[in-house]
Image 1: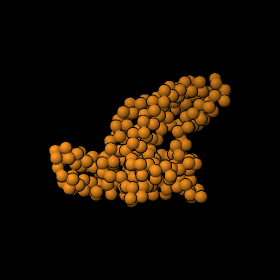
Image 2: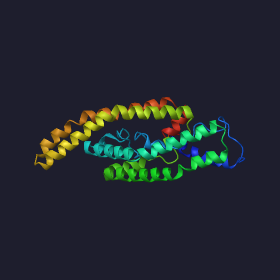
Image 3: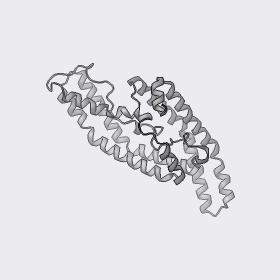
Length: 248
């Protein structure tokens, strides 16, 4: 999926190699041009090596309700903070496609796409901060496990997807986030209730009873992430599945 992040840059390079003054036909412009990186659309992507539901972590290292609430809040804040830049990139994408459809020159289309460069730089910087903030939420044991299982030359970012697969996966991710949003909000509210109780002098047992209410929504989020992974794999060829899952 991350391989698609270079589509726009590849397109610019291709345009540079061609006659600058020639008009561009709609079919000669890669209609899959996508300036918006996948990571801003759904935290279901492998932002942190564990996923928002932590379905990849072993049982002994599963995230606590407090950790899930913290990670969910970070993702939500990131998506809100980057919404304007994402909208701006979407507008540039539309303008580039419309320019190609109107037969504009490669120079004109390249100039349109180039306006997205500083926006992408801001998004990339915000994403790096999100990754760092999420990393700080994990325990040393969780970080060690993630590091030891982190894909190197494989994983979602190393799979070359077709335009249709990419669109389908993005739709699945967006459906996933819509489905788990109520449970994520419930988890955050339970955690806040536990914090308030702790600050009010509640006993450890009382706080534990409050947090116990988060067990069921946590389970639902994890299972939803597992279903998401299965649905994505069903869209891939056997070779893509092996690379996605880092299997030889």
